[in-house]
Each structure stands twice: as structure tokens, then as C-alpha cells.
Image (tube, rainbow, N blue to C red; front, side, top):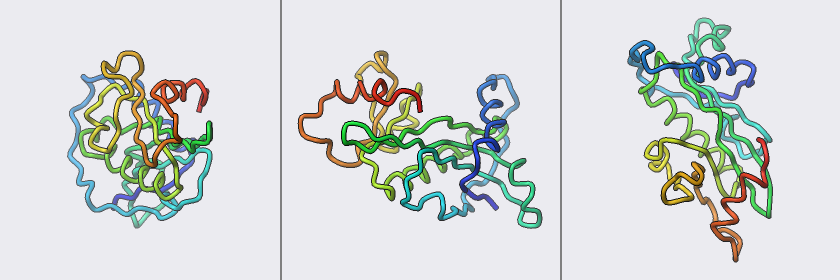
Length: 178
């Protein structure tokens, strides 16, 4: 069974390191059916936390102790408040290179967006080099050529009046490091 649940970053970090060092000539992806999916309600409850780590886990119901060895994907949703905006930042997304191209990242992003909506965030931001991956989830690039910044936003609520594109471009400076 597949499950998306909240986990500690410490459990997900080995996968993140593996993903950062992934080379395209690494092994061909293995097929995986990601549709039988259970989502732990803790992941999408509306309680805002400064940092929520979600993991896509292939669980073995007969042995729950193997969960950390079966993490196939992970992502962090960071929360910040600035300029009267409640901002969700999506970062540190990683997928096990052996199981890439199986919609694991899409499933994780869908759950992230459920949490973001339930927690009443105003906007969601992420930094991406591949636009089409995130445009289908409502993200738009802040600049036309995507060279000035690779920040993408998803406006969940109307912005305060007088808010400009320049204000949005400055969000990354205002937020600092997640």
C-alpha cells in the first residue's frame, strides 16, 4: 500500500541527498502503481506548522518498522507570514531515482495543496526550472522569460490592494531562508 504521511526531515534527508546527486545515466525507472494511495489526515489538517515534511511511502502492512526504508518521495511545506500575507513555500522535493516518472511528485504536490488550502494560506510559492510540471497545478512564473527568477506562484486568495509584481518578486528577499 502507498501512503503519504508526515515524517521527520531526518528520515527523508537520505532520499534528498540521493536525489541531489542523481545523474540521468542512473538506472532506468521502475514502474510503480501510485493510485492505491492512503493519505494520513494529519498531513492535510488545517493547523499551520512552520515546516511540514510529507513523505510518499510504500508501506508493508505486515511490518510498519520499514517505513523509513521505503520512502519514495518527500517534500517540505514551509510557512511564513510577511506583509499581511500567509505564504506557503514548497521546497526540497525529491523522488527516489529508481521510481521517478511514476507521478510520485504529483501525488505529493496534490497533498501539499490540500494542506495549503485547509490552512488558509494566501499564496504558495516554489522555485522550479521545469515550468510545465507545476503549471498544471495552477502555478505561474513571475517573469515572462523565467530568467530573472525561477519563482512560481499560485494565488490562493486575492492579494491586498496595491500589491504589484515587484512586491511578489521581493517576497523571496523578505522571507530570507526558509
